[in-house]
Length: 311
Image 1 (spheres, rainbow, N blue to C red):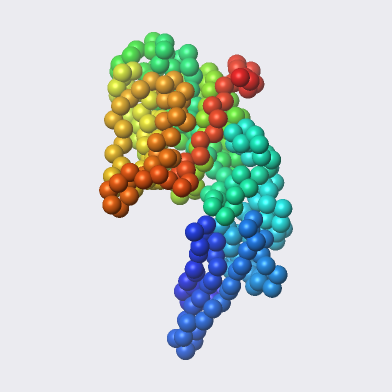
Image 2: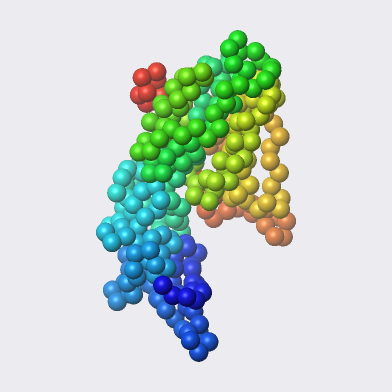
């Protein structure tokens, strides 16, 4: 272990290119240099670091394993072939590409933070017209956490004390997004929901922690009102936090509207279009984005048996 500060130069994709530090004489010296092929394979002759050391955090800033694969947190990536070891959970959205593809074969301009997700789910028939909405945060490797404001308990009064909330209820590890949604249906014996559709957004570990905190605020509210402070706030808190993180906090103002869960989830991708297409520049002008800031998965409808309903 080196008892000194190590500094790194990273490029626009988070790739560790050069590591440097002061030597015993106080002079800067280069301690590690990395050059990569587009999909992350290191050039021959690069320095090899020890597992767990700073030299092992290379492509996209991820840790290189002894297997030669990179640990992205939720899944492992193989830079020698430019593919994930498992099917991309958003494969249906990019049907022209391999389901194992990495950043739709455009590693020069994009990177996958760590394969994590925030899942927005809805029980379309829970409340007439409005439905019921909730949020799941996490990934298959580390586990999924469920957030739901569950109304006023038995009798389904439209207003009153909020009861039986799920505030980060652990759903388990090793589950796909759909399996996590199915588990959320029955995890709370006092508040079971027939979730029948969901969408996902890719996030990072750091984003997940902020989203969990903000989503929990809505889920554990003491009062419930079907028109006002309701389950929709759980979805909106998560939605607004993602937008706040990905955009310039100086100008972003969270939406104050409180639409029905069905409205939120059915129009999710369309609602993201503005944030993905434009931004307000330092000159206070609306400018087009070169890359989308949010990746939204397809709306996935599922039946009572948990099978996907093909459109």
